[in-house]
Image 1 (spheres, rainbow, N blue to C red):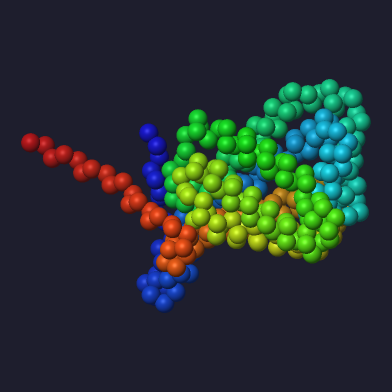
Image 2 (tube, rainbow, N blue to C red):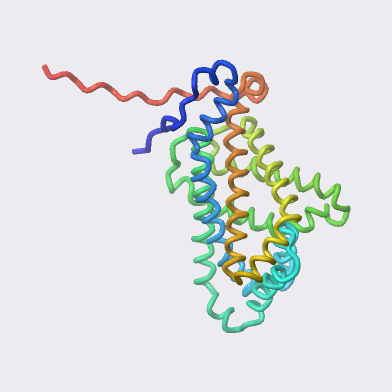
Length: 294
């Protein structure tokens, strides 16, 4: 038996807000229904736990060009310099040169990476389902989607460095290419993880908002993250690096969750709904009243 289609919102819009600022009220109700901070924190934790074994597996088993591409992507996204960048390089490149690490990684490391990373896929799927007020999809229908999503995103992330430079055309055109690729990825992500239960067009506002927000986070990180990471690494060692990266992931997934949730609200506004052909949500199932004894 599937779980209830939707839960009542924890936040009730005051009467004055419903009257004077109805759009803001709908946004706040949506954030409460999605449980914004809970989803973002869960996504950040799952992404962090999936990224650690993935870095070791890529460093130990991937060819040299892939290891270099991984370092370029991480440094380009977070703006890493100095000791923090040296730490990432040491982990990635030394894993590939250490025969003991390669032997111990093997099949077990790949399986652990897949299990850890698909946990992030499952958490993101549940976030999308909450945002679109849909019941949880069955594992049989969703399992292959988790793996496909993971493989596509790993490929996209590995090539973020060349994409941000538009494959040599420069950073200005690279920003445009990065934004377009981000919109396409988040558009496809929602449709895939929702199991095709929502048509393509209504998912477009959420894809645009999420891609723009993620792009702004990445751009701002280049100014803040290098100093924060290097300072934390000097003061607290590896634990400081973990704390800063996890904090960044929470902030990133807050933006992602907000983008997906706001996309639902925008897609159901009267004017966008007409152009996007957004269907009305079906009413939640009503429980039958208990039969009176004869």
